[in-house]
Image 1 (cartoon, rainbow, N blue to C red):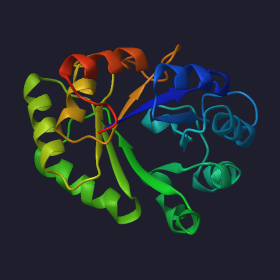
Image 2: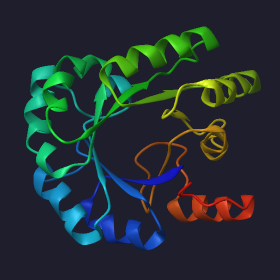
Image 3: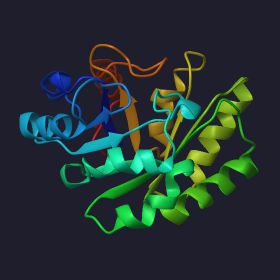
Image 4: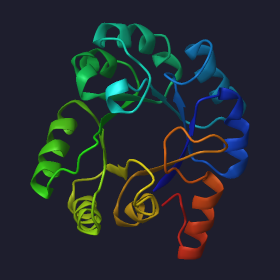
Length: 214
């Protein structure tokens, strides 16, 4: 499990590094300025791997363009990023991106809670075009958390799971214990509701007696 510091401001990269993040996610849809320079700056300041994410409004972000507009933005950062986050609606461009030396995070963020059967189907769908499926759901009941944990434990690895919103936010800490590849955190202003800070996750892992980099 690795700790990802999700940033809207590349100027926070050093704080993320100092707090103990393993990777940086730069949210291109939230930041001001040049995305390419932002990714370059994160790499130069910290030496940490960078995930470039341009999250659509349909999945909780601010990007309102179509797949071709998405590609025009992402193309500028591909040479400087280690991971590219690709939602299903942009997956038509996954093959072109795969020709570059980057890892594809195939992501789905949903305001619903899929059934266990649907989660496994979604994982297979995402793995068709991505290296690491990332599935973030919105649980309504404690039973949903139990199913999400069961899915995370049983799914082919690597896989990343999480929850949206402040409800059941503790699942963000629990899911990595059952095999989720990343836990997304903040180092100042959260980029998503319910995020813990990098420092909080580091402390939780210490209390659990775990190395966050395992």
